[in-house]
Image (cartoon, rainbow, N blue to C red; front, side, top):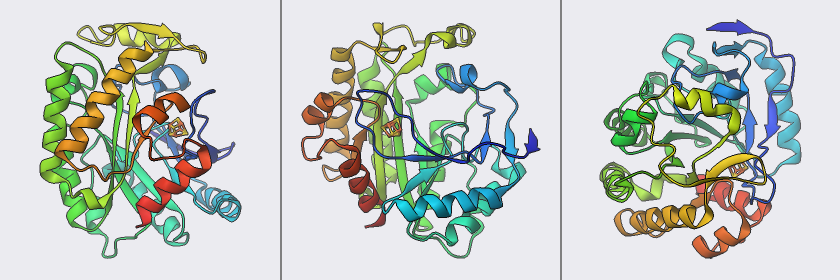
Length: 305
Ligand code: SF4
């Protein structure tokens, strides 16, 4: 791990992908790199260095935030694009610095996105800010064992989720990537049931569904994971040069998981799709206007309700 100055921009509009309905998210790149090395992680192909880097000129990040927040009424932003937001938090305590920054931006929603159970710093805070969302990327334990082998267990993540929820934080959930494999239905059915046991549906800020996708350049990294199941579903090269499941397979995954969430957790949940087109939105989430502005406003309002 190293500390360095960010020479480029901290705040970036999420690039999403052409043809997909963007959710209007922004990324705040305060640190990069991740120790978990998941099989499907595109950082393994994108980042020049595998060593996590933490940027030190946070006053510049704050200035950028001020500029962007003046132009965006419903700003949602997070540090989870090029890193896991909390994986190294016990060593760096960056979450404390981040929360101090967002205390000054009460109308901007900030999201910590993690697979860790590192919530110690969040629990120590006396005051819970209403504009902070703590999100977990979740997969069934059978998939964690093979694709996310260096991450905390599902049980540890759910326990952490339960604790921060009790403390008053809103929770985000990301089913991303959804992975097709033998037994995927019982795996995801059980995952949703386990979440339903710990979550208060009224405290969920948002819940994303995104299917596996990766660039060709990631294949060598995937091959290092000998037990990987990433090639069990039929993959095709998309218009953005990324490999993803054939659309009927993606829709089957989304339909099944959505139904399980509706029947085991609640029908009244802010679900959204990551990197899917208008047609998929219209079929799966017909109550939401599939456009960047409307989706972003919907998720922002859900997080602040
Ligand atoms: S849908 Fe996913 S990729 Fe697209 S803008 Fe939102 S977070 Fe980014």
